[in-house]
Image (cartoon, rainbow, N blue to C red; front, side, top):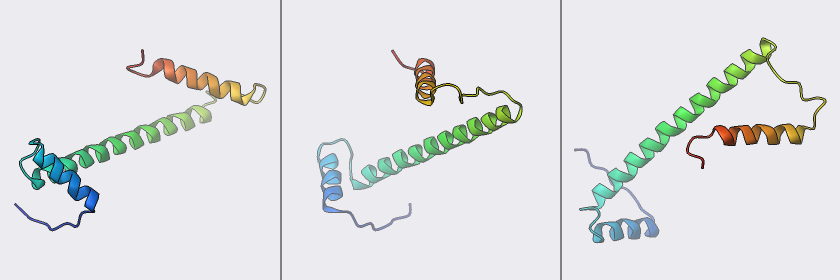
Length: 96
């Protein structure tokens, strides 16, 4: 298994030491590997979110090009934005 030397801040060092001392991890390497797994998971999630946003933007531009949109020129923009926010909240999964 490859090894690498890293420089930690005092706060990071203390965190690693406390996690090992607590018994949650056997050693510092386990702490850092778990941290890297979390970082990798976050990167994948951010990439998926970005792809979803790009897809939604593409769909929106296709709708505009096809004339499928609501003209809000006559409505108060703040009200329209509020309605969109309310609709999004109602559709959000896991909301009670």
